[in-house]
Length: 258
Length: 261
Image 1 (cartoon, each protein chain N blue to C red):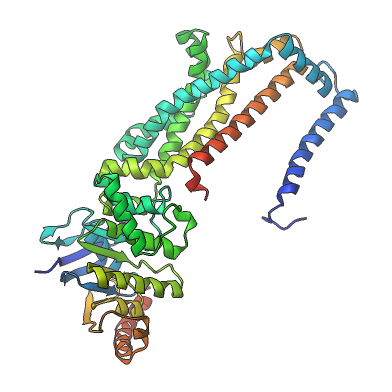
Image 2 (image 1 turned 180 degrees about the vertical axis):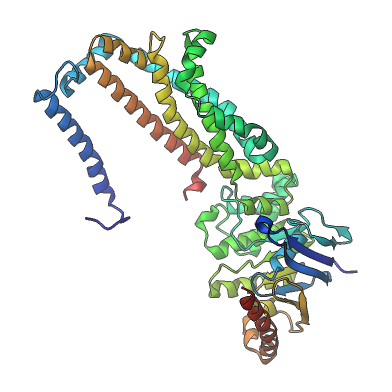
């Protein structure tokens, strides 16, 4: 066994990471192709790929993928635009925090999925309702995390800025905001991951398009291959957007890595 | 008229969890002449940093007041530049942008700003590092940038809170010479807090020794060693005599601190 906390070389890391995927698929293939589970409940990897191919080519599944991506980003961007300024204001000005923090902390525990029936009543089953589900699910989380990060801005940097003649507004604009920008971006990356779970829930109920709709539709036809393909697509898109977000952060905030 | 006047300044911290209030600083009177280099020497926890922070306006005194050029200090401002012990460069700004921070806050146009920044980059010997992030610099270079950043604002007084405390001995010696060299050429009123006796004597035209907590001024020792000072001064007999005297003063206070813990 390696020593605790001892780093692993990059090459070995990649090999180990891939190895688990291989093992996982091998196990899946063994229980399905080997006849250890009923075909009706779990499709094997090969027919899953076949189902996926058919979905994309014949059923225009890529349109569902696009609409789901649009919903995630639409709701997420909306939530970010509202939540980030509120979070910064809460972190920077303690009376605002005292005013809003209890409510936001409460609202954050309200499950977004429980709002779906209400949102359908208010906004129908169109796009607005889908965006609102993601909005409700993300907005309070972002507010709270941003407020905490901003509230823990290094005090010595704030003091240094004051001794250099910064005004109170200057402190917020030129110390608090840039100091926390990378962490706020990191928070958004995290919450974007959660937004992907909300969108699927939103699409499972009262929807006629999207990856989640395809999944619930496949269930009624016992098309487990399609369901698994849909889940894998979500995972892949999540992974890609995460990589893109990370790269964007690295490019925007080179000073935080250096 | 003195540049800086500290009159009856004391500081008492509220007790923690209903405990008794703690007095960090007994009433202190100090008058600093223009272009004087004063070091405040004292054992750790004697309230010397508190005194400096009160002058900076970062903390309010419990009693008394501070006058700079006859004007009362109520809040921090660009007339009192400060260099902290911790590295307080803004990590998202380059060396040049850090030095320009105060000028930018003042709304100075970029061209003018760049000229001043270039001259201070030169002064602290950081040519070629203008576009580095603070993280890419050594501790000594970061503190040099911090000094340049404070000076670029042309403050009426420069406050330094153990600025070289986190540096290794060799770097610290070089930084002392650098700062002293700047002071000898440019003349500035300086208040420099340290617990290092050698540093206190080498830099100062006056060493103010503080007692153990609650701090008060115990002695005020003029240092009449000639300028420009060279590091070899530290081994001269005059220097050694001063050092012996201050060591004795501080030792008593350090022992008092050790016993009270």
